[in-house]
Length: 367
Image (cartoon, rainbow, N blue to C red; front, side, top):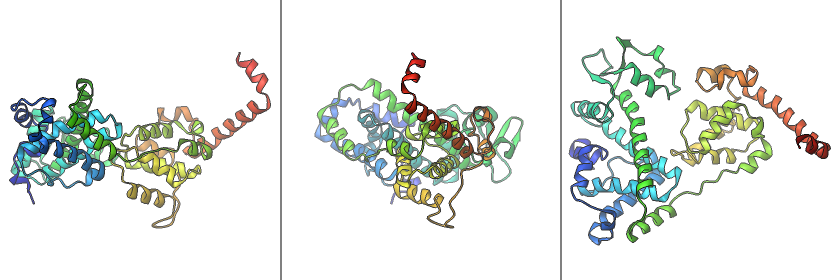
């Protein structure tokens, strides 16, 4: 099996300038991929995308092509194929898979090489305010306050909050694994940006690549959100703003925090939505794993583990985790999302009855 030290840097980290230069130096155009001699690159690009669909973050980072250039060239070609498939889930799934492999590879580098690569990626590639120096263990790097707040604000884990960090003269102390985690989000944005650029720039594909796109499409999972069945038991128009916000992110394929996932699942369960329908909502996530998602929802429902059905987190906990909308102003300062839902549901049901009983008068009033 390949190891971190035995693989060239430009093969392990295909987004770096030296990898791009290696690919561009051959002068390939997309039409060239109809040439049978380039079939190994096309096959590897398709494999990269299908592996992302099947394995996501669990993909072995060392399962790569034996030929260095095939591995290098397959990355930009895979980006083009993902762009032409035109599936939002695949776009995010591919980016998630690629950056998770990069994260694992960085953590497996020898310390000296890891420091050098982290600085190259953070400082030179992303222009982040990062410095390496002699710091008290376990810290190895410092990051400027502005960059730290910009990146860490996306995390709800209290460990990332500034009050829980060491800050000296405007610089935040971080461990190498923490800095790699911060870089990971930048990388994911970078890969998605490349895909979106390819969506705009690439118009026509040669036959070989059209076939590659067809193969990838055939490997996409069926992802269906049973919105009608959800609406039959839970009324989305009565949901509080925080729940509506998380739901919108989930169905668009965005990743949300662990707390937000728990909060959404517990709320839906307590409004009568089935486990299968809740799992279908999470199927839009780029890191979706049906077995894990079902287990977690069943655990919240009290079917596993302690067999305790969890209640929806209180508004104070939601506020602490940064998920409250406008500090509760829109909800009448209730103490729990379920309180809002029950109150608003009575209003929705009453409104429905009024429409049924006085349809003519309501039409006149609205005209």
